[in-house]
Length: 152
Image 1 (cartoon, one colour):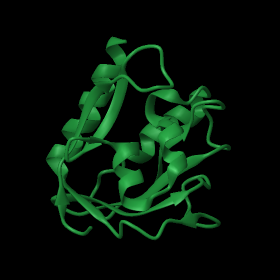
Image 2: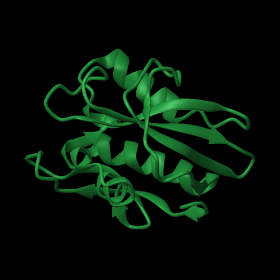
Image 3: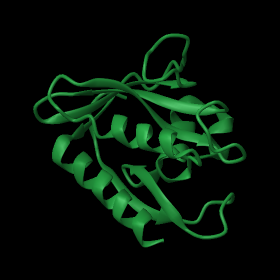
Image 4: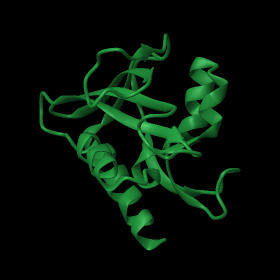
């Protein structure tokens, strides 16, 4: 699954929410559905975007800060999806190892769990191996996600 993909943000009505909420999409497919198709991990259907769903303000700020680490050479473990019951970084979390080049944001590998931004003690998923996004498009998707969240 190497290669450049399209990333965007949109409002989506999921089964676990009363109203539509912002989600990231990859090639037009909602992130948790896309990830399920790649990994066959059935529990990702029950997860919501970490950005916008975390109840603890400190955890929420950290999730946004890690996602926005976009200087060339930056690498971070970024929480992307969280449990809709607990809405924290201690329950079911899907994280990604995100690295940045001059013109791309690369999601190197996905894992169950989150360990304060480090890659220790994570359960790495076997696929996909990496997903690359054009940096400008990624930045636009993050800004659009924030805008949609602010309008709710």
